[in-house]
Image 1: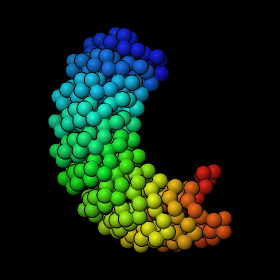
Image 2: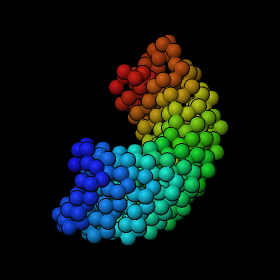
Image 3: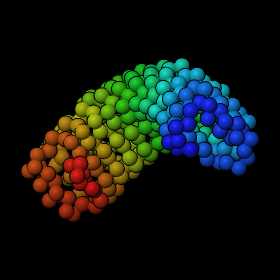
Amino acid sequence: MNNNDIDAKSAKALAKVLSDNKNILHFDIRNNNIGDVGAKAFAEALSKNSTLTEIDMKNNDFGDEGAKALAKVIRKNETLTYINADNNNIGAEGGKALVEALRDNKALTRVFMANNIIGDEGGKALAEALRHNETLTDIDISGNDIGENGGVALAEALRFNNTLTHMNINCNGIGDEGGRALAETLRKNSTLTHLFTANNMIYNEGARALTEALRHNKTLQLIDISGNGIDDECTEALVEALTHNKSLSLVNISNNRIGDRGGKALAEALLKSDNLTHVSMVNNCISDEGEKALAQSLVHSKAKSFITRESQR
């Protein structure tokens, strides 16, 4: 059903079929135009369906009303494990309803709500839900403008959550305050393996706290802090942390302000690391001479990729 110009009227007919069907496990209605009316119809169908495990409603132009209808069903649904509501028009009201439903839900493991507008209130509501939820392993709320308040609340909630392994909060403007709160959490969190916090206005103060936290963290395998304000000094702090970290295998620090000094320090860290295999440094401030020096120092590294330009793979 992906990309079929399905409107609200057609969505209501499809929802009727879904409500009566006992065989469909995965339902994909991405990239249509079902709107709030269609989202409500699917919510009604989900209240009657007891077999569906995955539904993808990405890019369907529904907003708060559709989200609130879905939230009512999610609170009680016992079969859905995955829902994708990326790229819709869900605001603070609908966002709060959806994430608050996660507090009661006992089945969902993956929830994607990227590129909506849930704001800091939605972020704080999600944080409260995560303190209690015991099934979610993967959440994506990138591009939702949760701000510093939402970022701090989420970071603090992770100190109580013991199931989340993947969290994407890219493009949310959590700032240095959010970065410092995340750093404090990473020192103690023992479940998160993948953290995406790119393009978040985290500058040296917050970024330095994050990198220093990696010295103590024992579970993160991937961290993406690209598109922030990291410079050579902060990169050197990251290198110091990496000499102690034994779990990270992929680091993305592209689109920052790292020069030859920071690049050289990171290359030297790769030579000593047994676990770090992929580093991306695209669009930094490394000169041609700096890149040559990096290439020479990496000949004996165990790294599978060290990318400094977009064309490299």
